[in-house]
Length: 63
Image (cartoon, rainbow, N blue to C red; front, side, top):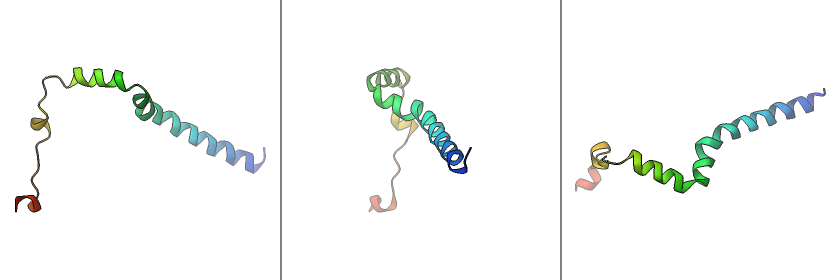
């Protein structure tokens, strides 16, 4: 196998591995928005966002 073919296969394998890792994290939720909205609605029921993530007042905003 020539050196160029081996480099192309290694590079292509790396790109394939990165794409396979990003698919369930980014692309699947992006294409199935309604399903993920329903899941998040169930998971976040009864949670007050202000308790979990309080508002931070910066020095510039206090003036």
